[in-house]
Figure 1 (cartoon, rainbow, N blue to C red):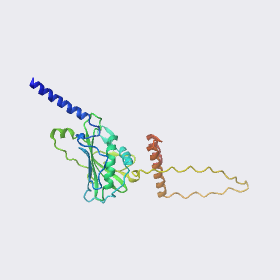
Figure 2 (cartoon, rainbow, N blue to C red; figure 1 turned 45 degrees about the vertical axis):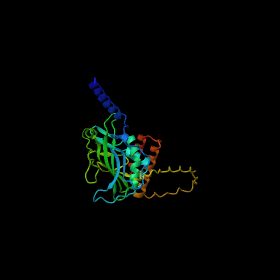
Figure 3 (cartoon, rainbow, N blue to C red; figure 1 turned 60 degrees about the vertical axis):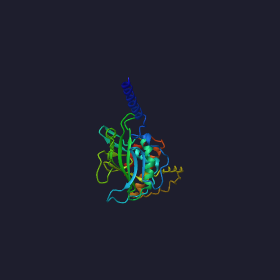
Figure 4 (cartoon, rainbow, N blue to C red; figure 1 turned 60 degrees about the horizontal axis):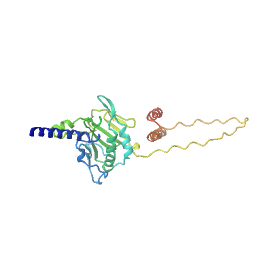
Length: 285
C-alpha cells in the first residue's frame, strides 16, 4: 500500500507539471511564472531587459570594425510593432511571419527603449522565445541583432526558429545563442514589403516609417470656372511643362507611399488595395 501511494504521488506530480506547462502563455519562455511583468522600462543606465527566462533585449558593444551607429534613436513603439509584423521568414515548410502578434506586443516597447539608450558603439541583441506553433507547441527562439545605420533600422537574424527547450530540460545546460552578424550570413531568408534587403538575412527598415507621424492628405483643388474666349482671338499655346527632376519625382513617390500606408494602418483601405496601389506608385520610378 505504501508503494502504491508513492507511485500515485509521482504520477500526480508529473501530471501537475504538464498542466502547469500548458498553462503558460503562448509567448512565454520556460519558467515564465518566475519572472514578473513590469510596466517600468527601467532607468537610463539599464543595459539589459529580461522579459522571460529566454526572452532578453540587451545592449552590447557593436561588432569590431563596424562603423558607428546613428544612435540613440527615437522609434515609435506602434510603428516598430507594425514594421516587424510585416517581416516574413522562409522556412522548410514555407513562408510565415517572423514574429507573432503577442510576441511583438511584449517586445516592441523594450526594443524602442533599448534603441533610445544605445550609443553609437552599441548594438541591440534580441533573444525571443515563444510558442509560434500554438499554445501546445514547444517554444522556439529567434536570435537577432538590431542597430540604426544609413537612416534605417537594420535587422539581422541569425536563427529564426531555434529548437532548444527539450535539450535544455534534459541537460539543464543553457544553450549558447548566436546573434546576427554583419560579417556572417544567417540561414533563414527574410522579406518585407516595407524594408530594403541588404542580404538574405538582413533587412533595413527606413526610419521614416518608424517615426509614428502620418502624412496629411492634400486638400482637394478648388473647382475652376472656365473663362470664355472670344472666337476672334486664337487660343494661346501653353508651353509644355519642364520635366520634373528625379529628386522631385522621388519625393512625390515617397509621399504617396506614406499616404497609402497611413490609409491602410487606419483601416481605410484593405491590405490587398494597399499592395496594388503601392505597386502602381512604384512603377513610376
